[in-house]
Structures are given as C-alpha cells and as structure tokens.
Image (cartoon, rainbow, N blue to C red; front, top):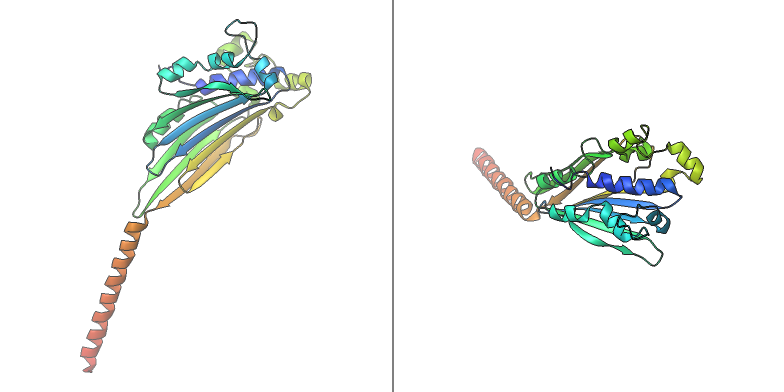
Length: 255
C-alpha cells in the first residue's frame, strides 16, 4: 500500500481536532498547478495559529506541542519516500506555523493518481480529475471534483477513532464543541481548493456543514502558428476559387 495514501485526511483530522478543542484558526490550501505541457504540481499547505499548535498531541514527548509534532503528524518521512517534497514547518512572528508538501507530475494521468491519494475514495475531497484534449490549434485543460464537508468536522473523522469514541469521529458532537468554545467551527476551520490551469484559475472555499460542492474549471491555450497557417491557406484557397469562378463567368459571356 502507498504509505502516502490519505495523508491529507490524517492532516485534516489533526487540525480538526485542534480546532475542536479551542477557538483557534486553521487553514489548509490544496493547489493543483498545471502547465502548458500538462505537467505540474499538487501542493498541500496547512497553517495553524499559536492556539491550534498548542492543542496538537506531544508526539515527540518533549513536554510541549510545536512544529516538530506537526511534522510527525503528517509522517513526513513516509511522504518523502513516496516522492513528495516536504518543506520543514516554519513559524512566523505571530506564532502561526505552516507546513507545505508538493508532488510533481508529468501528465494529467499522473496528476489523477496523486489526487486520488489525498483523502481516499470516500473522503472530503474525491473524484478529483485533471484532463487534457488537443483539438486542432489549441489545447484544452479541465479540472473537476467534489468537496464534501456536509458532515462538518466529521468529514475528516477516522472510523477506527470513531469506534473507540462511541461513534463520534471527533469524540464530541459539533454542537457541543461550538457551545463549549463559543465559536462556530466553520469560522475556525478553512479549506481552499485552487485549480491553476493554462488560461484559467479558480478557487473554491467550501465551509463546514455546506452541501457537497461540485468543482469545475476549464482553460484553453491557443497555438497561433498552426492557426495562422490554416487561415492563410484557407484564404488562398478561397481567393483561387474566386479567380476560377470569375474566369468561368468571363468565358461564358465571351467578354
């Protein structure tokens, strides 16, 4: 089994738990960047404010929750072994800690294989798909998929964890969490999905509890060299046809 499979689900579960404990801010951005030749990158970047970092489990046992625990949660070594580039977690002056992972692809088909690993077939991000078509004189790119946060933070829950916590993937009802923290979880947890295609860029920001969101984007690159040659050739054919018609008309009238 690919050791990177569903790593975004693990990451989102971790930051979801952090958001559920206190009124903090967590943001995750998934970006699909496609170049003119069909190659590109899939990037996942997550940032947690100071309060959210403090709620992460102390995995390394050093007595505090910090950037190293965030790196451990996403299993950075597994991701690197699977071909991902993992940037070391960085902490800004305001205490916000960010981590970024990137995977390159050479074709849309490779992109689709990578995208399928993000949250799994039944996860919050599913059926993510990059396409490319090459009709004459242009290349058409497409991106599609579904972002389903309709179950709130439970969308990122873990079945094994839920079984151990009386069927609640996060250990507590969302309504109870919001009552305890005094803040809507949708205001604490942010997810952005961006598709950067040649000729078009779109970003979707589904909110917790919203109905499933269908994402679609299309971009086109025109290859003007072949198109110009085509129009020049077409113009020559039309001009030749007009000359022949004119000659034929002259011959018919004897002028």
